Amino acid sequence: MSEKTKFATLYYYKNKKKMSNATIHSNLNPLDSMMKRFDEAAKIIGLDESAYDTLKYPAKIVTVHLPVIMDNGKVKVFEGHRVQHSTTLGPSKGGIRYSMDVTLDEVKALAAWMTWKTAVVGIPYGGGKGGIKCDPKSMSKGELERLTRAYAASMSDVFGPDKDIPAPDMNTGQQEMAWIVDEYSKIKGQYTPAVITGKPISMGGSLGRVEATGRGVMVCTRSALAKMGLKPEECTCVVQGFGNVGSISAKLIEMLGVKIVGISDVTGGYYNPEGISVEEAMAYSKNNGNLGGYTGGKNISNAELLELECDILVPAAMEDQITDANAGNIKAKLIVEGANGPTSANADKILNDKGIIVVPDILANAGGVTVSYFEWVQNRMGYFWTEERVNRRADRVMKSAFDVVFDTGKKHVVSLRTAAYIVAIDKVATTQKFRGVF
Ligand code: NAD
Image 1 (cartoon, helix red, strand yellow):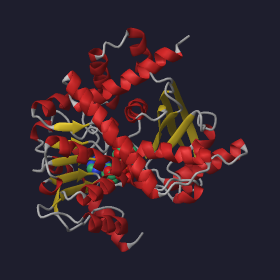
Image 2 (cartoon, rainbow, N blue to C red; image 1 turned 180 degrees about the vertical axis):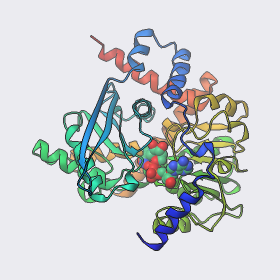
Image 3 (cartoon, helix red, strand yellow; image 1 turned 30 degrees about the vertical axis):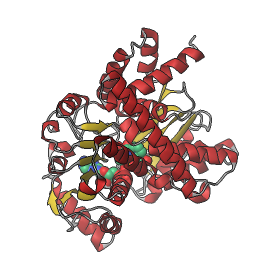
Image 4 (cartoon, protein in one colour; image 1 turned 45 degrees about the horizontal axis):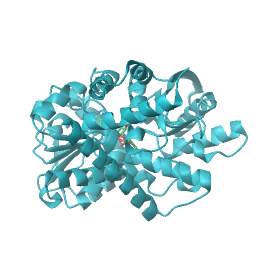
């Protein structure tokens, strides 16, 4: 561990006590949040009872217990899940997260969100999600590799390019995806890159995938600002979370001309009304492992960060950050949800009543799964597209999905969130009707 990393880790633990409730995983259940939105949209479109019941429950849940030899020679057993919420529109698609906060309910909610997300952007996938309850930051690379391979082996009959296609999520990335492809391919006796997306480029990963989710957040931000009649260069923005989604969203939104005045990660928030250089902050975070000790802005808590004076707020860390406890204090005019489920259902009404426009997660962060789909298409066809081509196609998908959701919102006089659920549920339910049930 470098001196800088040591300092950042120490800094984080010293400041952890200062972190407010909003930064610590709340006890709100993301599944309840998802179901409340689902119910509201289902009611508006008059979804019939059989379709409602079919879509309410996940199609398949697999839980595994994975014994892994740790570096100290002892065996530790980890719990992992894979939930396939729906395969109506195509093979289930969704990331795998590593976190001590992983619960089956959380994975179920995330899997259902994937069903709605793929339907909103119109790609031929259903929804799934995986998770392993572990603390990856405290594990060595060898331990992580053994855990990932154990998970891939025990899910080898669940995953498949035409069945269920995982991807990265919190605390997983290219390396974990590479181990999964390798393990899966060995078990199946043939190299199968299309079983997973978010791979390294040399293994069939797509150019543009790393930036895709943040890029989609930027396209939604740009589209929403235009509808609201706001000029990017006159706007300020605060981004919570500085991982893949948060940092890239911040960088691309800054490139629109917006001033980024606040950023944060697990070590806390950093506020500078004069503007933060996202490039500098990214370099700092890369060198230090996180933003701990960053001096480009005043150190504040994540809770304070969310309530800062700004035009645009991008929550891009984790679930339940905006709740009924703090929604009333949010000052942003526009919230673009980079994370999955950052707003709890009981905060929706408060934000709506305040006239805050919320571009919901199932639309705002769908750029990642869109480029994952492009990666899968390239793998299956043996293509390798240029980054320019990937970005152009992804931007087109995101822009047109935003417009459809916006128009649906206008038609039904509902929030963009309810509109996005209406678009998605309607699409899945209509297809389900064509396909039929037993
Ligand atoms: P990541 O692990 O790269 O980054 C997570 C960031 O959040 C880190 O900066 C971390 O320090 C910060 N964080 C963690 N706990 C926090 C807390 N309590 N308060 C403030 N910050 C905290 O993860 P990511 O891939 O950027 O994913 C972030 C969110 O976006 C998740 O909700 C994920 O499901 C969602 N998402 C990711 C993708 C993708 O392509 N990576 C796609 C769609 C949605």
